[in-house]
Length: 516
Image 1: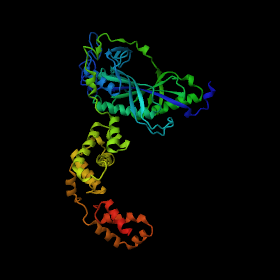
Image 2: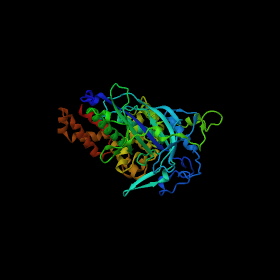
Image 3: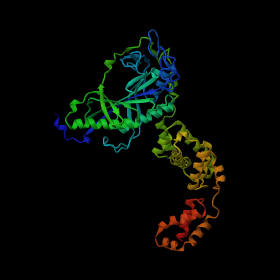
Image 4: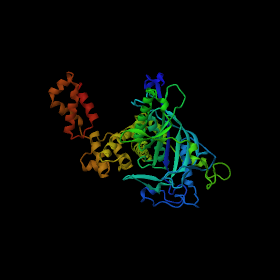
């Protein structure tokens, strides 16, 4: 027993975490045959053929689109691309693998030695000590292409196998063990999902199995470089599952260290049980030797350099465009947004484009009228962000919808924001208008006219004077120091104007009168 560890606190340890991620590519056909790649939406065992079932005498034909998309993702993750590549056979026997082997890549992956930067994560987790302020670079060890296995369905004590998924193109991304907290692992996965969606290569939906993750974790005393036996956690089908499973496993391993039983830790595979919120051992972990890899004899090598290239990698790189984290940073700088608002707005390509289109149209509408602001884009960007991220999202949430399901057109939202920015309607009226825009699809002007909400309040100054003259006792109390009565006066003004007055303008008028 190692007594020196018995009284160590968790702050004297650090977690070492790496991820193995599989992303299904949404090509039209499977990886090595002409079967439809839409098997998840079809009856079981209907999108299959002799090739994806591994019948004798059949030959696989690689899907060029899948190879191109895998290369696209590798480039987006700043990987180096192997100029010479071939497929390997990964041999193992399991009911979901009809051929008895999987066609994968081992010796020469599509990409290697990449990196993805993620923003720092604030956390109250008991398994995470430091708070970081700088971006965190996560190394990408390799990205390779392979075919998916079939899907096992556990039902009434039986295991049913649906081979529709067998042969679906998969990219596997293996990170370096650069994570030190479950929260960073979760943030990385969320960014990876966004990148796949931005590139248009996958829906990357964890709940549907488009994106799957196995997490490897070990614990070690701080200051040590040594890697201790790791646990691979499987059956993680949501971002929360990844975070919770890692939290649990880190605590489980720490307890063994506390008890002096760290020598009992072995390299093993454990399953995450969502019901018990715990992991349990499945098997000792295999090594690469167990799979008896060898080059796939039925598929010739392919090249990205030389005379017979499959395609030009430099041309593929031009298709990447602006990726989520770069877009977030630009939104913060260009529109003056906080990082959280930028994160929400860049959660999908559609939403990010929607926001920028609204800002551009709004800018063209009112540019000449707001020259007094130092940075017009930041002025209107912040306000547009506030109404989309907070107000519009709230209205949609009340109807069970997300921002991606927003029915308000860019033109109507721009017209609405013009009314808000120019203070032609107050926040109360604006909220009513926005709700009608969502539910009825009308333009802001149509709603203002039909609901009799249009127009600024005429002679607001006169109404303010009326309110003060009708409440002399409260005016005296205010001037004696009870300034909280300002809200009472404002309420009276809003009541007289049926909510049409601009609260900010009314407040300024009230203060001017009361402080004379």
